[in-house]
Length: 362
Image 1 (cartoon, rainbow, N blue to C red):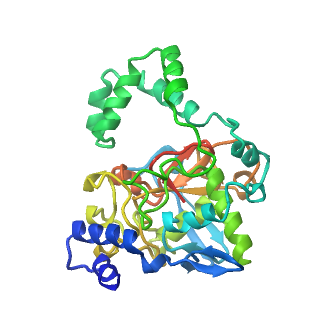
Image 2: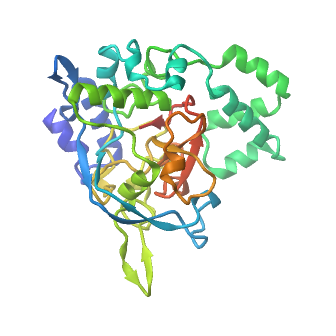
């Protein structure tokens, strides 16, 4: 175990060797995620990193050619000190929640929407609505396959699937989804039995916003410490760090957690063709460390935040942090199938709270 952990963080080893070390380590027991008994319950205590109070620069300007309208306007926010996890929550950690009966105990599922979802209700359209929305976008493309392949942001299997559904009428698609769309299991994450995604050292995926929140509630009760999802501005501040000192009256914050220059060796994105979540920390040896020590903030899996999604980014906590609002939530960080432009610190996407796929974590 010690040798494999050393290999995982060894900059002299090729990325593929580090990845293999991480996968083997997960199967035989990763010492970073050893469970211990706390108040009679087995739990993996997360490694938390302090983020200092300060004035942080968030969002993007129009000068960033990779940026989107929903990242603007760029602005500063004053944040109190907080802590953020060193890694996205792993399968090893989430297994403790499951083994402790997290899916059976309603008290961890806070709010009416979460409790209704746990009982199997479709509270906000879920995957069904997401696919219908995607189908509508596909209808605007002259050549679906060429458009998706040229973007470089889709796996061959995804291109085949989207081309297939693009050829359907809306009624045919609804019938297809009704027969084939996987529903939330109500007892485990969607990809829990998928060997390509269930390694204990990989981030847990297939996670809805409700499941991420329930885990935080459970962890808070077991440890007696307040754990929660970060707001999207906290997530971005932790990824970009305190802005550089003003130059000619202008402040600057890093484009990626490690700096402004893209390097495919530092993030699990589509460019690296790993094609699945990687063991956390596998890219650290190449310098993929955030300003406060967090790992894998760019790529690997999207991280759910607590924040409601709004199409522009003048973040307002009073509007954005409404737990019971039935609206889309924001995810950050990009994933293993994102292009390098989509793993930037400022990139924002949205999903309904009961949405999930094999790139959504927290």
